[in-house]
Image 1 (cartoon, rainbow, N blue to C red):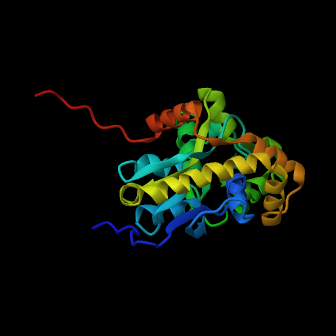
Image 2 (image 1 turned 90 degrees about the vertical axis):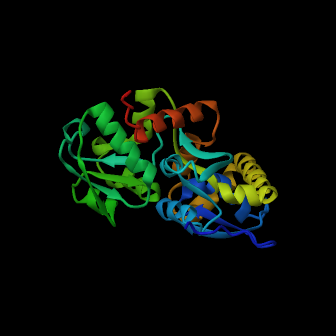
Image 3 (image 1 turned 180 degrees about the horizontal axis):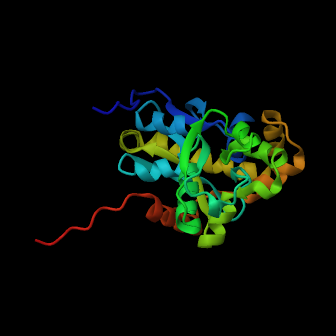
Amino acid sequence: MPALSNTRTGEPLRYGRMGFVNVAPIETAFDAGAVARDVVEVSDVPTRLNAMLVAGELDVAAISAAHYLAHRDELALLGDCCIASDGPVRSVLLVSPIPPALLEGASIAVTAQSASGRALLATLLEHVQHVRPTYDVVDDALGAARAGRPALIIGDDALVARGACPPAQIHDLGEAWSRWTGLPFVFAVWAVRRDVARRRPAEVAALAAALAEARAWGTAHRDAVIEAAIARKPFHRGLYADYFTRLRYVLDERAQRGLARFADLFLPKEPARVPR
């Protein structure tokens, strides 16, 4: 039997927040007290939030887009907030001393923190480079890259990798997807459990509105967002100014098309039925 969601009257929604700086353009408004929300907040890496949401340990969360696609029967989008790129993303990277087209059978070190990044890498290598490597989940993908192994690096570590690894070995997966499909890639979405949306519609709607308001505040107060990112992960201001310009936070029509394209490639196909 699936875990029951939190539905007691008066108890705040349990909200999962990604523990990366890429959420700063939305989350800073809440941290600064510019926008209010009534939630119990849990901060963790995407894969942990993915599992907690489906297990019923959270009611709402920012999760990997790949995980949302795989669980659409249980989850619904919360408003139109997302994390996407329409070109280079900077924070989802394949770092490899071996050219991607030569990775057939190679072992790639991958982080356990992101479902979308790993799914995107596998999709690009299979469909664009026509290679199928193996994937080795490691605790320190950045360390593996520094030691000369092909590695998938995401989030804050990817920002470090851009300055620590040879530029010729760095392959931006957002850029590769855009070049191949002509569409944005959606890395994360905000999702709510469908049972929670049914039982607590007013609170879910209020949280969706608060997220949209926070996103608008972040757009209007970019300096505050950059300061919050620097406080969390000290990089120079110019890096964050560029980084947040490259990211997209609205699941608009083109982003929806990119998400649908990824779903077509990522989700398993049902076997064709043979007429009797």
